[in-house]
Amino acid sequence: MTTTNGHIKTEQTTQDLTMIETVEQLETKTKEVKQTPKAKKAKSSKPKPNAITYVDVVLDAGSHSNKSMIDGYENSFSSVFKEIKGDLPSGMAGCFSYKNKNYIVGELADGFPGELVYAFEDNKIKCLDIWLIGALTSDCEFLDELIADKKSKNKYKNMPIRLSVNLKLLSLSSSKKGDISKILSSLKSFTYRGKEFELNINNLDDEFIYSEGYGAALTAKQAVSAREFYILDLGGGTLTLTQYRNGRELPKAINRHIATGGGMQIVAEQIYKAVSKADKGGQEFRLSGIFASLKACRRKDEKYCTPYCLGRKNIDISEQIPDGLQSWIDDNPTIKKVLIEARERLNSGFSIFATGGGFASAIIADWISEYITEGIDTSNFQVLDNPANINVTGMQLLDK
Image (cartoon, rainbow, N blue to C red; front, side, top):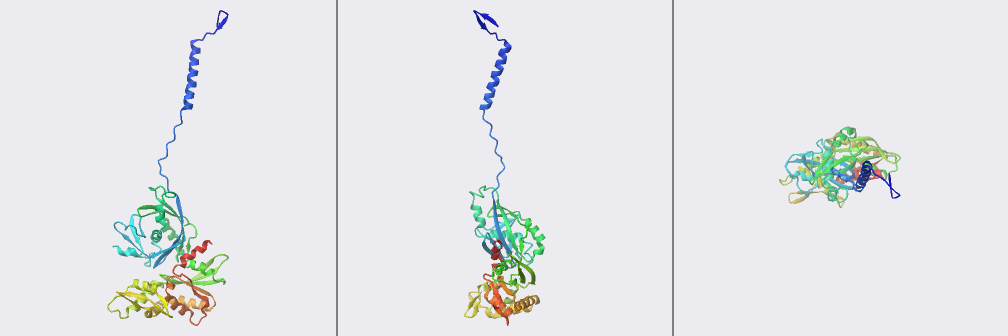
């Protein structure tokens, strides 16, 4: 430090100047760092999946008819399918791709080349995955609405639509739960109308298999005060008499009598034989025509009109049907055993409720009812309303 004219003058060395410059540079760089905007993180290139759609499905994969209820809406199709070569027909229900093969379910399959697979030929359980996809793709609107919904759940159009299914399966094969679960757990995805669907059945570890007539039992429970009652179910492949006991909330099956091979498939075959004995003017009857005729049967002036389309005219086959039904009983002792058991239970004062597709035909329902109730008070015997579908629709009462 030096003094000039009485003023103090400070001397700065080269080292001091260097230090000042270094500090100033550091401050400048710090400001630059603060002012520099942070680099944005790169967005992940992994595509987002679509949201999961939850759906409740009741499935009765019967020997003759596949009945279902998807979120409360009923649907059905004939229990047949066909694997086809080449492209699927566009705009048609029941057409889908699964495990690199193309399938068509229901009556539509008959119009395409290939071998038909029938449920009653021991394929009810083995092909359960096909029947379930068939039920989903045969619904008039469900999957189509999901495909059209591109703004909310399924807005990522290049990604699969995801389904989580809560399944209630109606089957007499509850003892085969392990096999059934294995078949259904292998169902991971399918393609419908060119769109891939991923599917997960979310309750395979829970109780998801119910007796085929359980929907009818839930319905009957509301109409009977007694603790025990019976359900007589004439389905496509079997005739079943099941004893139920009312619990605190739900009925429980406690006994069952089954006539395997005693269902409507055999009923129709026996009626076909009886009708074929009549003079038909060179025309041949068809088994499919017998089913259609029984479905179209109506009561008329204390008689029946059961129209069969024979060529260009209709004939009434009502007179031949009792002969076919009697042969149905006489040729299968287990059928007679089940019906006699029903008579005995009815005679003992128990209530019996009839259900199944067989009882949807007026002439079949009346003939079997008379067979069971002859000489017995009929007040405890009742054919349930909508017997063809009540086994499925009645399952809605399970959640109420």
